[in-house]
Amino acid sequence: MGCATSCSLSVGASASASTVTTGGSVTLSASCSGSDCSGATYTWNGPGVSAQTGQTKVITVPTTAGTYSYTVTVVKGSCSQQASVNITVTSAPQTCAVNRVRLWFRAPGDCCMDRLNGAKIQGSNNGSTWTDLYTITQNGTGSWQEFTFGNTVSYSSVRFVASSTGWGELFELEFYSGTTKLTGTPFGSAGNSSTDNFDKAFDGNTGTQWHGPTVGTVNNAGLSNVGCATN
Image 1 (cartoon, rainbow, N blue to C red):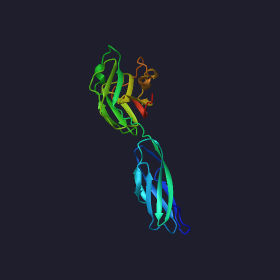
Image 2: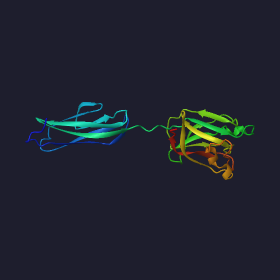
Image 3: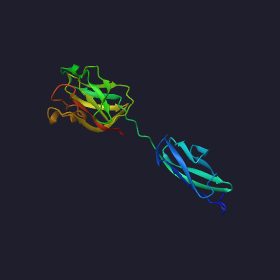
Image 4: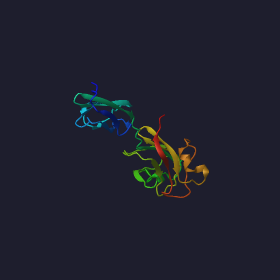
C-alpha cells in the first residue's frame, strides 16, 4: 500500500552493528520523520523475526554466516512505508583454549628426569600477570610426553615454566586446544647461547634443545598472539 498524497511519513531502518558473529544479538531501530509519525505502528520482518512490533527491537541473528535483510513497515491509518537494513553475520572465531601440552624433556638415558616434576603451564592476556593452568607431576622420559588438563579459557599467551630445579631442558614444546595445535610467536628466557635458546623448543627438531643458563622458574618458553592452526 502506498502513502496517500496527504500523508507525511518518511521511514528509515538501522542496526546497532552492521556485522555480528553467528548467534549474536543486535538492536534494530526505525526512524520516522513527518507530521504523521505520531501514533504510527512499527512491524519488523526478517530471518527469525516475524511480525514483531516496536520501533526498536533486539534480535538474535542466524547461526549461519551470510548477509540478511530486515524490513520495518510503518503504518499510520491508510499510509504505509517500508525501510530495510542489511546485517552481515560472520562465523564466530575458533576458541583456542590450551588444554593439552606435548613436550620432549631431556635426551633418552639422561640423568635428572625428576627436574620436569613441578614445571607449570601458564596463561596470560597481558604478558605480565600469569595464571597457573597445570602443574606437571611426572618425571621426564627422554621422549615425547603429553599432558591434558581442563582449561576452558582462551589466553593470548601461554608458556611452560621450569620447576625450581629445572633449567628448561626441552627439545620440543607444543600447545594444543583439543587436537588442534596452537600457533603463535615464540618467546622465552635465554639459553646458554644461541645454540640452545628458547626458540629451539619450537623449531620442530628433536635434535636441538633449549637449556637455560641458570636453575629455577626464571626459565620459561611459550607462544604469544595465540591462534589455532588451520592445517
